[in-house]
Image (cartoon, rainbow, N blue to C red; front, side):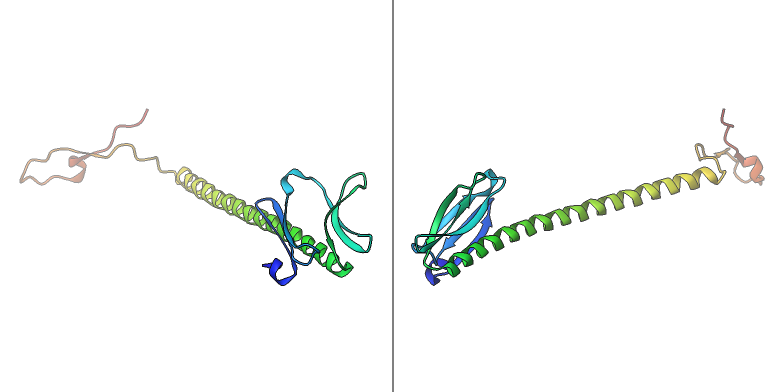
Length: 160
């Protein structure tokens, strides 16, 4: 845990930025709900000998989150936050790429299936053979008599 080793760690979980400020003047864990914010500016400012990491609003107002003894520690915490936000953005892009690949695969399979069905329908239509709707009728043949095939088999009735 970062609070124990005196470092700042940041990560995004369930739409919230979670920062462990282990290197701040008073170590603590901070949670910031990203789903309610469209744009936010994190910045570091010097305030009376200490360095504050905070949020800057759209009108330039600065809200301090925590203070650090040195500029290096404050900027290191800011870098940890930036890395966590970049990692979250990369995860979103990865999910988007996977979803796109699945959609392309489904479209490809649908195209192959449609092509196969169309190809078999075209082959049936172009062979010239009528579809089989009736089988030839076999007439009863008396036992022991020799008969020609033409006498025993009768062609199906013509279609109308």
